[in-house]
Length: 315
Ligand SMILES: Cc1cc2nc3c(=O)[nH]c(=O)nc-3n(C[C@H](O)[C@H](O)[C@H](O)COP(=O)(O)O)c2cc1C
Image 1 (cartoon, rainbow, N blue to C red):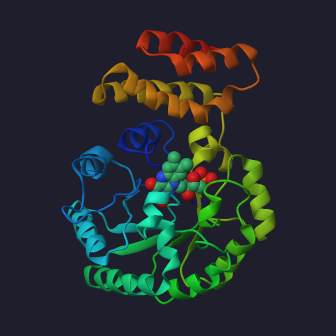
Image 2 (spheres, rainbow, N blue to C red):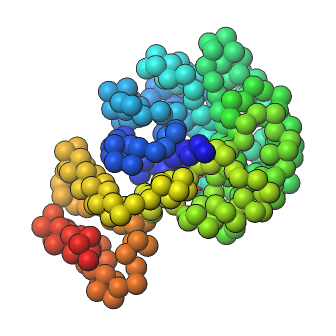
């Protein structure tokens, strides 16, 4: 079974990927949070740092690009190629208002003729350069039925893999994924398809398999894998008593690595708080933890944070 780590902007940057890969190391492919090339440059220094091979040793990483301009996409893909990447991913799913207003991400799904000529350009480039382009998409902008004609369009091109998050733009990340549309992708796509959305537990994966009538493979995990970093182990039937030790190591590695590149304390603590908003589920149910979670959100200095975080971790 192949497991992919979904891109999560602000979370799955290179520090997180390295820590996760070293401690859990059971993900087949990571996708970078999107880079958004501009007129002036294909990559910002921060995006370049996130993708640089020195910062991604031993990690099977696919950089993701968010744009509706084929010239910008190709410039960014060339940069990535020069860094050694052989596959890039196109983001057709971002639901954010500012992104969609510019016709990018899920916003690009609205204008199918522009999308078609964009795909023609980028796949001409990929054909001549021998570079793979995969796509991560939603079902549509306004209606899930848009997916039928979108899939016909994708089928015109040599898409290396189609990752489907079966929601429309206005669903954002809420509600049940519209799994029945993924079944259509499975039976009609000409390329390999990857399921993504709302797998938080092994039961979620089993229910999905029941609904689809087959085991989804590969599968892409996002929030579920951040919330429970041992979820990939569990899906592979590979769990042990060491789960909590691994988790503690992940926490400590991230906490120390962020301190090396961020200052002052509060910036690191913001990062840790965001992670705890996912990790909380692992520690729910104990009343003293509920109080400590509130304290964690208020901590302004490392010492305050550590006193609370280690009480929760050592529970
Ligand atoms: C905080 C956050 C940041 C995200 N950033 C990206 C991104 O950069 N590129 C992308 O394709 N999807 C992004 N996503 C969407 C996820 O990759 C994924 O498709 C979504 O969370 C659904 O999968 P899940 O239910 O397994 O989390 C983001 C989602 C969240 C919640």
